[in-house]
Image (cartoon, rainbow, N blue to C red):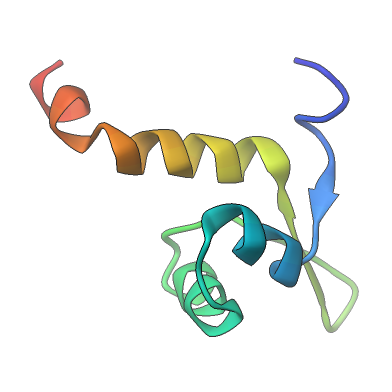
Length: 67
């Protein structure tokens, strides 16, 4: 694992990587679809590696189901 994998992203930064709106990204977090970490009472961050894994699973859902 490299340093970029443990990089914390804000919700807008994650949304840009996911090519989704901020509201969609927030909804996925609140639904438990996209893992996130709360730091303090209001700040929410997502690990870059979690975003990249989410993208990978989204691109190849049929392959994962066949394994």
